[in-house]
Length: 257
Image (cartoon, rainbow, N blue to C red; front, side):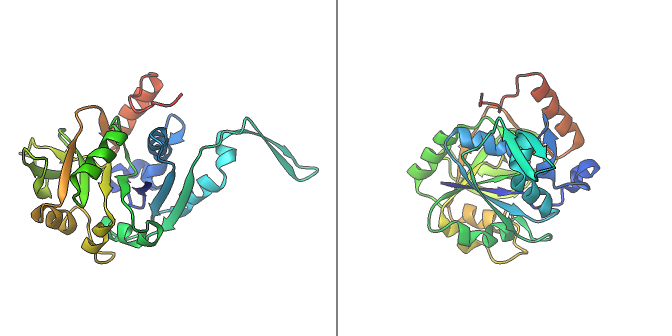
C-alpha cells in the first residue's frame, strides 16, 4: 500500500521557520519531520511514498537527491573528481515527488497524484505530525469495514475538523472545530479507497470540507480511534515540544533502532 503525504502547504502558522523551507522540512533532532513520518510508516512495512509538493518544492527534491550526503560520511577527492560514501545508510524506500502546485488546496493535491496511485487503497497523512498509531491495525480496520475512507481520530484540543461519530464507528458529520468543542478531531493517518478521487474536483477542493462532509453524509467515512501519543507541528511551541521529546531520548514515535 502506498503512502501519500501532503507536504506542499505554506505553513503560515509557523512562519518563523517556514519562510525558509516547507514546514515538512523543519528539523526535529537534525532530521526533517517528513523523514520522521516516513521512518514511522517504514517500520510497519510501508516503503513506497508519493509526496505532494508545492511551496519551495525544490528543497524536498534536493534533500532526496542528496540523501546519501545527508545520511552518511563522505570523502570528496577533489583532485580526481570522485566521491566516496562511508557508512551508507540506505532506506528501503521508493519516493515519488510530485509538484502539485503552490496554491493548490489539499483535495486538489490528492487529485493530482491519482495517476501515481492506481486502482488500489492508499494511506494518506499530513507532513507535519507524528504519532504512535498502530498502522497495521488501521489498515486491517479499513479493509474490514469496506467504506471509502478511514480517518484516525484523536481527542485533543486543536483547531482541526470535528467529527460526530456513532457507536458503529461511522462518521455522521464533519465540520470545522470551534473553541467550545471538546470532541474528537481528525488526526490524519488516513486510509482511502481509490473511489475517493470521485469526490475531488480541482485545485480549489479543500479535502477537509466538501469531500469529507459528503463522505460523512453518505456513510462512507469511518473513524479509527487512537488514544495514544499524537502531535502536530503547527506552531513554534509545538516544534520545541517535539524537539524536547527527541532530545530526551524518549520520543514516542521513534520505534526504529
